[in-house]
Image (cartoon, rainbow, N blue to C red; front, top):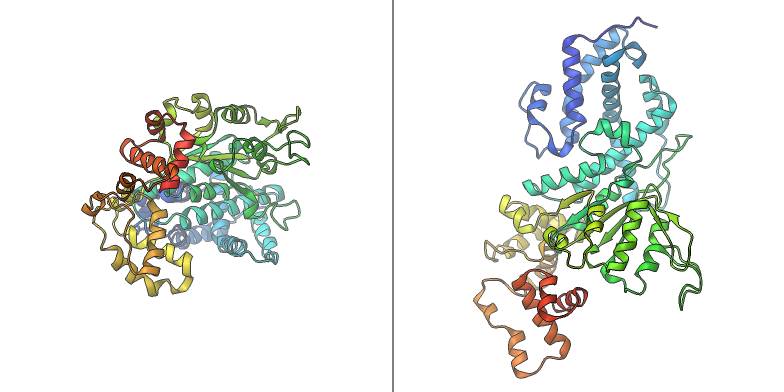
Length: 493
């Protein structure tokens, strides 16, 4: 074995700067550090992480070659702080040489292929890590981290389109929700322990809370098996979503916690609830949690506090192993007001709060983001033919007022594209500030007595909501409960 020698001061400085850069949040890249590493000005942050890191490789390879010439190519050849530093360098080197293989694995699963993915390259990667000096168990662990990093980058970058600062900030927040602000500490202390860190997504309807939740849920740890031949779970098995507002109050506990045979009329067999089906590698997404009834909030509080729950009709507590991500279109101030939402439940739920930016905020920061979104949405709708329609759709959308607020956010934009494709133009259902909207069809119908009770109440609730801004305020004026108000408003939209 070659004698142990130290890194030179220049090598140590370069490797330290490299690891500080590549182990940082990739959506908050420090251009100054990249400029110093590249020896020239770093490109704008629209360049992908993979391209940026690829540009670092020649300088890294030259230094590793010089170390090999001195007989320093293995962790055992270093001591103390140099050894700790080279662990990180070797990990990045292995990651950068193999990330494309993980991208292929992700694409294979996302396309829903019925055949098992080809993992014939796995032994080569394992041998590479063993060659750096990592033991077999540790090598499998780092491979699982490589896979997790690529999934997180894939879903956070691709599922959330946009170059505006609000969207860049959102991506940084989602990355931190998966890996915290310190990837080194994450790998040392929090590996496979993120289940206790719940996340609450706040945002208006149509801002993409479901996509953000899926990005977190599909980016958790999935270990490599002991033989190094495959991963413990497929991507789609790690994320379960449910919209709580769509579940009836009588069945919501059964759906969440499960029930035992005979627990209530119609319970003809045992039923495994969502919390039982979500294992330690999974994330359970509870959408519209702001509409949850107080008794169910109390039971969910127990899950968050004690990590246990009891199926309906049973006295045996079960353990919840997964992670919770929740979302609501209620504002933070509204949740903390005490109007139908327990504060202790909020504080247990909000281990991390992420606010989803509205489309108007995004476009105010970067108007070009509209074209990016149109291209991405069209690509999902019609695939490769999107380019043929994009120019015509952008021309049609340009007929909207420059300050159109997009009250339905990205979801409204998606429907706008469909209307342009079908009808040639998009006319919002109620364009704020348009003189034509002053002619209120609902009011006219009410005056002539042509509305039934549901239409009358729905229209009234909708107008109160437009003026007052929250379901709670409408509930106070009308004397209805919040859930009923929301149902009438959604039904009149």
